[in-house]
Length: 157
Image 1 (tube, one colour):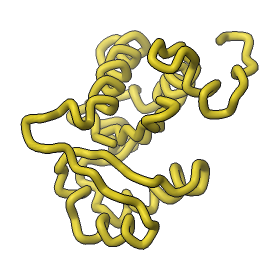
Image 2 (cartoon, one colour):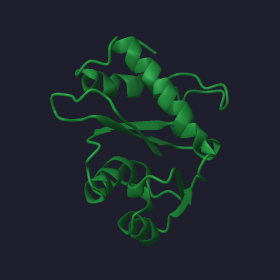
Image 3 (cartoon, one colour):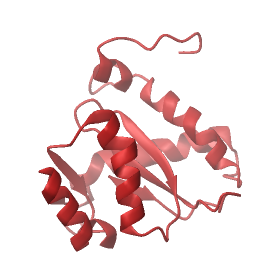
């Protein structure tokens, strides 16, 4: 997991996307947040958007963002039985899946909202849908198909 930061502030005040990627299926969750959101709020978002939909992870790889290194986050993940693996400084490949996903997300947002205007947050659900229904060569399927074992039924995909 990682943050895609420094986006134009949306009308709702969002300026960051929290990117959470499943290493096995490559499925991603793109959640708009504020760069100033504290860990207690991010923990609530994590429980709502990740744990209630997909269950508790065995391990999480992230960078050394202060929020992920906080005692609060470590205690929460310890209580859930999740191992935290932090990427080492100057070795971004450890969290490479998130970095690659952020690059793809940036490209997809540029295609939808040419100048990353304040309306980027309105495009995010469709970008997330498109990402999870796009073929990934590494898994030879779309993330949705890898996660659910079937193709997404849609006239546009």
